[in-house]
Each structure stands twice: as C-alpha cells, then as structure tokens.
Length: 558
Image (cartoon, rainbow, N blue to C red):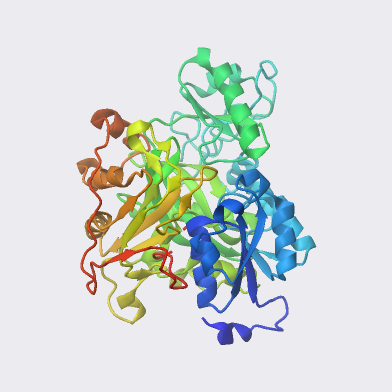
C-alpha cells in the first residue's frame, strides 16, 4: 500500500495517517522497519548512538539523530533522549523495534504526552505483560494453565507467608504437577502467584528442580536452574541482583523446571477490539535461554493441540484488549499433549520473518496500520498457512570459546540473494506458486563495526519451502553461500546443526543444544564461502562500502 492509498484515511475519526516515523532502535530491526516504511511512503527518522552513526540503518533513514554515546544506558535506553528526538524531528509516531525500550510503559506514556503515537500496545497492557507475575495472573483469569510457582525474596519471610502458594491445580484434574490440563481440553490453572514467599518453603512445595526467573524482564537474564536445595538461596540472591541490574526490578519468582519441554509461541495481532493469530512457531533451539533457530509452524504437533495453543493465545489477547503485534509463549510437553503459559512479548519478535514467510503478511506493516487507528485488516478466516520456514540467527560470538562475544570490524559480508520479500516469495507476489525461497535480514556491510555494547546479532537467514524438508534443504544451501570475515561468528555451528539427524527429524526440546554441544565438543571452522556466479538464483549479495542501494537490508527482524 503506497502513500496515495494511505492518504485516503486522513480525516477519518479516530484515525491518523503516519507520515514520519521515528525508529528507536538499531541493527537489523531498524533496517527492517525502515524498509517497510519506505515501501508505504512513510519518512523515517533514526536515533543512533555514536557507535552506530555510520551504520547501514543510518544510511537508509531519511534523517538521523544522535542521542548519546555507545553504551545503551546513555542512548537507546534513555526515554528522555528518545522522546526529545521524536519531538524535534516532528515525528507522528515512534517504532521501538524489539529489546531496549520496546516494552517500556514509561516510553509509551511519554509518547502520548508529547502527542506521538507509540507503535505498540497501550501502557496498561505493557505493565500487565511486562510484569511476569501479573501476566501469570491474567493467564489464569483466561483459563490458561501455568506452572506452579510464585514470588519470592532473598531471605524472604517464613513459612506460610504470601498468597496462593505453589498452585493447586484448580480447574482440572492436573497432571501430577499441580498445573495440568483436564483430559478433553479443559484448562487447569496451576494458579498461585505466591507473594513474598520463603524460597525454601515454596521450592519444597513445587518440587525440584526449580527455575528462578526475573519478574520484570526476560532474555535469559535473572534465570537460574536449581537442582540442589543447598544452592537455592544463593541462586535467588544472584538472580535478583542480575534482574535489578538489567531491568531496574530485582523481583524474582520460582517455577517448576521442566527438563525436556519445547518452547512454542503464537503470533498475535490485535486492534484493541479484535484479536487474531498468525499461527505458531517453535523456538526450542536455545543456548542459555537465548534462541538460535526458529521455525513456523512448530513441527510435530497434532491438530487438536495446535488449535488449543492458538485459541488460548487469542483468548488471552482478547482478555488484555491487545493492540498491536505480540507473542504468547508456552512451554509444551508434546508427548502428554499439555502446555503451560510462560509470558507475553508485547512487541515484534526477532523471529517474526518465519511467520511472514508462511502467511504472506508483513507484520511491521500491520503494526503501522493498527497504530493509525485502523481495524484489523485481516479476519481469522482470511489467514492461510502455506509451507514451512526456518530461521537461524548469525551472531558475533565464538562457539569454541564458550560463545564469547566477538566485537570488531567486518571485513567481508556475503549473503545469498534474497528471493523472499518480507515473507512473500517473488513468485507468490506475482500471483504464482510460492516455492522455496531465501531471505536475509541484516545490517552488515564490509567495514561495519560490531560494537561491544549491544546484542551480538549480525543477521538472520530465513528459508521457506513447501514443507519442512524443502525449507531445511534451502536453508542449508543458503548458509553455504554466507561468509563473514573480521569477527568470529556462529555460522559454522549452524551449518553443523542443520546437518544433525535429531534436528532434521524436528520437534527437539530446549535441552537439545546443550546436549549436542556436550556430545560434539568444539565446532570446527570452515574457509570463507566463495561468491557464486552473478545472474543466477544462487547468486550471492556482497555488502561492501560501495553498496548504496537504499532499502537494501539483505531481506529484512525483532
């Protein structure tokens, strides 16, 4: 949809045409948002730290505003600096991307006070979903099962303190864990948000192993698995300190730890009145709770379980009167047909391209339309799922040295030619059949600096096929045409993982990667991949300092 079509919405009550959007982020997601804005005829303003002033995203944006030095605390995490930049630029709206301030209710309120549209949920929703304990209570209110657990404090009060305890399996027969689903599809709650509980008392009721989790944030920070009661007190103290440093919120809570669960999530879109889902994703290949490989749809689920997951997510979204793009995450025991609510991510996800690849829906474009006050442009019956897509995250880290970050200067960046555009294959966009295709979302170019201050994500390589086997084959070929020099990456790790028989079979659990690493040892390196001949579908795209094609992001995630 171009500028002319969008202009028809001007003057309609409750709707506002966005002509200039400030992108309050960096890296590949900044490139991704800028590309869709350009396609829709929307001007973009990018906030950058001093470390990102020469980045690809800065070259693509219509305007760039420096908001601070390299460290995120003095730039990307400053609500005042970001809003001040949006006001100075005359921005109609602010897109926060993912990470940084993307789920910050204070930023959403500051935008509203300045007359700027926050492209995301309402502040009240951000508060409800950003507090993991509050989110659990909302999940219970909609009938979703949660793992038994509750809030604790380091050296917390004695036995019997707090409300709710470790969960009572209300609403169903349970599964022996106090958090089950009733046979036939009814949801047990495993409720109990236990306030200010004593860690030892609560853990004893839950049963070991337990997971210590941060109440105010995610991303693997403030997470500790505890198997020995003697280690619990220290784990709670350390997790609380880490959560306080990362999120400014030291609260932690305990949950029962599931040894071999799968991480499955459901993508939502809502306009505040109606909510639909765009299917599910599997994100079980993780290292220390950081996702490395994602795919859509989640493999190996029976239709009944899949529909219960999707329906439960939509019910929670409707309960929250959700507005924007968001994801409901679940822990899945596929063998028992049971799942448990984990959390809501009230923003666009890093892995959103795999959903775009199988639905043909540009999620960022839908975020912009919802922010303009439009009702959802898709009804649930209109959403179709075609094929399978898999994504890998290429990070600047060294798997041989315990995944040590590898900042530095990129001297060479080679990626396969993109044959998917925001999830839609070129053939499908032209009205033909949607076959295998590749998409690369990146901000890399030769000469680019990988700063030490931020997440190590360099690029995402996404492949789509008519089925999972075809997608996997296409992704293997795509990775063989990638090459990044100057910094150490996990590229070879991904090549090796995609050749592993267990991963190829589908449906691995969250412990898969740790077991695989323990069994294989160090990951070998491989010489840089040669650039294939130009003019063919296999042609590589070499990003160098001379590449000035605006809109180029390799393919375009969060």
